[in-house]
Image 1: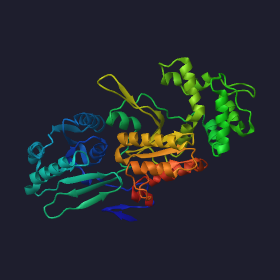
Image 2 (image 1 turned 30 degrees about the horizontal axis):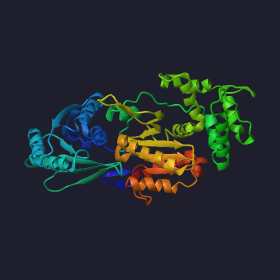
Image 3 (image 1 turned 90 degrees about the horizontal axis):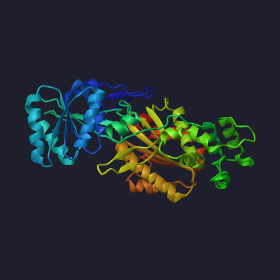
Length: 439
């Protein structure tokens, strides 16, 4: 049994048993910044049912506060009150103090993970000062992104008590749509939750375990580019892939593979209703060119979803946002999962070109942090033989220590393909809180 703060954690237990009720308040003041995720977690854990969340925000962060308030009202049935403040100290104090003062005697808290440093300091001072003369027991809290721990202390006249409540990570669960659309405000029209053509994908993983197999597959792709139907490979090295494709599509020994079979298998007409038949057939061919690795990754996660406490898993996520000028920004997560409130983003590249691998990893890191904050974890799965340089470049660019203490950026290469499910399992567990890794 290991003590963390004042909470006992058993190595045999799946998660620590935490009585969140002892830390819950009737009025929680939340400082809203650019990322609503920490505030959503705090409101989920620290506000008593049916109580009030006070969202303190600037005009600039008002859209974030609006989304957060809607989510809290709809999903948590909490009363939400908005407080708009200016950037100056006097404005922050003037806005918060008159609201807090009448609450003396009630359970009150301040969560200050979001917002600017100035907001945090002066909102803290306002709440503490307003309650100081009434034997205060206000809770002040901060969500530690590195350890997935909610840190709390009381604004007590006699002492300041630090309480590390473990683990916040698995105490709150968000699905992918809830995180990306509900909290972050991006549309998420479609994503796949089924690993289709899993047998063929597994066979392709097998041949890509060697550079020779990868080269033979690329040669076949070059030869069949533009062909329809596709003549499946007869080369002995590639025969396992051809065998699996025939089995999964119900083809005879001498039958060719029409591209429309792939279009139908992946339901591409539904996903891309505006694309022409020719464009859909080209899109289908991409699966053979490399998107099969997404199916391998998705299958590995689905097989371990329960064991890893993965709340949601999906592939081919295309978040998009329409701007006031009519333009649209969109990007793609090849595969993504949520574990508690933590986002795991996977970029898949069935090639070995280091420069392209690095570009894909960088983009995944930017987008994952945009959607999941500093808690987000990113992995690139590729066929490169030397992954160290790619991973080191990303760690350096995003300020992640390279001493093994922070595993949230990871590159899996060709050597990892043979045991990819087990490698993913170990990495996901390593990205949890320190106490969870220890268990």
